Length: 224
Image (tube, rainbow, N blue to C red; front, side):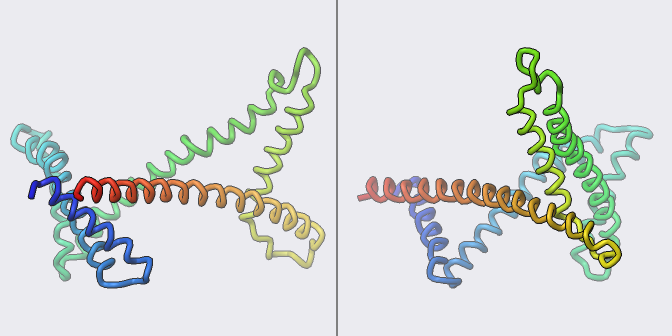
């Protein structure tokens, strides 16, 4: 039996074990998930060791001299503290590098969201009210004006959908009711967005399923 056929049979068996979840949670599905988690963890560890730890940490330690060596010892110390978390008595020491990583990751995430998502979307809404876009041959283009106003109102409605007006409701019941009504419209926009996102995810999963079924058919046809 050739290696290709053997690997194909292993892939076929694992695929059928995953498909067995159709009949509910069972031993075969759990075994397949365990194998997936173990292989993923092993592959990730191998990539980190060969692509990050050895070339970016171990090799520079041997080639660096003087004060620059202290900067290389710092990440090594953090890595050692993380490794100490496998020991229950020393697990508290691992919170130091984890806190550092969480802080850096949170800062980079916030900066990335603001620069890559929030700011471009805000500028896109503002640019829709540019005089050059709202005019056609020197006259107002009412279709684009209405569309720009609808986009602006949709953004405001979505923002109000995440607000909760519980304080001073009795003192300003009419004002709170108006805001709640606009927020309800925003929930419609949120629902449409989530529905479209679900459709895209489902379509991607369906394409992957069809591709896998076609692979099984072709493999069995070639094997027989």
